[in-house]
Image (tube, rainbow, N blue to C red):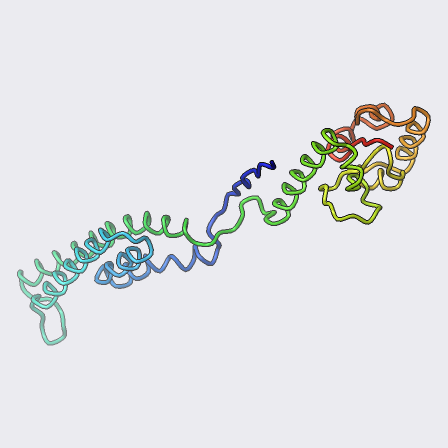
Length: 237
C-alpha cells in the first residue's frame, strides 16, 4: 500500500497589488477626518465573518454623528468662521474628537488589514512556485521507484526504471540505471562529462555490473557524488 505524503507548505505573502489596494482603509479614515472611519470596519466584518466588527462600526458611526452635531452647533459668522467662546470650545472638542477617532481607528484597522491580507491570494516567498513543487514531486517518485527496485528488481526492470532512453509508461522521477543505461544517458541524468560516463560503463563491463550505487563513486568526481546518489539506481542486467 502506497502512503501519500502531505505536500510541503510553501510560505506566501500578499501580492503587491493587494497590499496597495488595502491601504484604502487609511485613506477613507484620514481623508474624511474620521467621519467615515466606520466604513472599513463594515468591510472587515464582511470579509472576516466577525459580527463584533459591526458593533465597532456602529460605535465609530455614532462618534461621527456626534462630531457632525458639534460642527452644526458651532456658532459661525457670515463667512463661516467660528465666533465666540462657545464656538471655539465646540470647535476644539470636535477637532480633538476627530483626531482621536483617526488615530484609534487606524491602529485597529492596521490589524484588520493584516488579517484580511493573509486571506488574499499570495506570492510565494521562495520565488520558485510550480518549479519547486515539480522538483519535490519528482524526488518523491524517485524514492518510490528506488524502493521498488530494491524490493522487486524484476518488476522495476520490466517497468524500465532508470531507462529514460527507452519507451515506457512508468515515471520514476528521473532515475538512471547504472547497470544497463548507455553512457550518454548516465552522463546526462547524473550531470557527468562524457569521459566519466564512459569510465562508468567500462568498469561495469569489467566487473559484470554494480551491486550498489556507491560502487561507481571511485570513478566519479567528489562534487558529483550527491547528484549520482540522488539520480542513480542499479538493477540486474
